Amino acid sequence: MKSFRTDFACLPDPFLDLKQPILTLGSCFAEHMGQKLLDFKWQGLNAPFGTLFHPLALARLLRMAVEQTDLDEELFTEHDGAFFHHDLHSRFYAADRATLQLRWQALAAKVRDVLQTIPCVLLTLGTAWVYARKADGHLVANCHKKPADQFEKRLLTGQEIQTALEEILHFLPTSSPLIVSLSPVRHTRDTMVLNSLSKSLLLVQIHECVARHVHRVRYFPAYEIMLDDLRDYRFYEADMIHPSAQAIDYIWEKFIGCYATDEAKAFLRRWQNVLQAVRHRPQRMEAPSYQKHIQQVLCELESFAPMDCHEEIADLKSRIF
Image: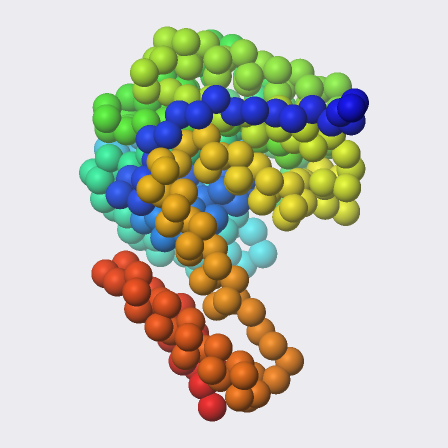
């Protein structure tokens, strides 16, 4: 019987268990994977720097966090009554520079604390296109809606990408495994041709890094799964750019199938059932059958002790009539 799709098999490399903290960095795809890991009770930080697409921005912030460096005063910018910083994602803002500097210092301290736990790091790169300030040549993480004529758009060189990846490795604990992936999000604003050029350049340098650090760096083929396995627009959101929730779930299953230990997989199967029960919202919460169901799920949650389930327990208890 003919197959009408490409079944993309990932080589098993089971090392990830619940004792291994997680740190995710990079594009929104890393954040999606990180949130699922947190939902399934992994500890760590999910995209603490926000959504960052190019490796130089990620390397810079990681270095600043490890070295406890303050934000460059020259890179603060004001927009619509708030202060932002060109090295930070737009979700980081404040009423004044000093407050934003304090926010960064608190964030940097969290990242340093997680790095001391020797986490597994998931890094997802999105694009090799960058924007440099014409005033000083600084490659920004975010333009913060400043006029386009203040920036010059250019493509990173292979050497710049490779240097950034090596710098990221340098500032991670030497025992921390690094999983690198290429974001399946399509940067169509660059045109499809230039998006492909950017992705290709990143992919070459990622594999160069894996080859040099074969015992420490792994490549997870999220990009290839999206393009060669889920090669249908029904697996994209309405914008035809971002993977759909169904696609993310599918890639997540491939990720866990590749890296999770047998013990972790057994826990995930058990926790998945409980998580579905916790998230279920019937039309009539006061119904006796649902109230009985809540008590059953609470008993099941208690069986996971000493794992922290206080949020799920509090959520369920708020529905008791």
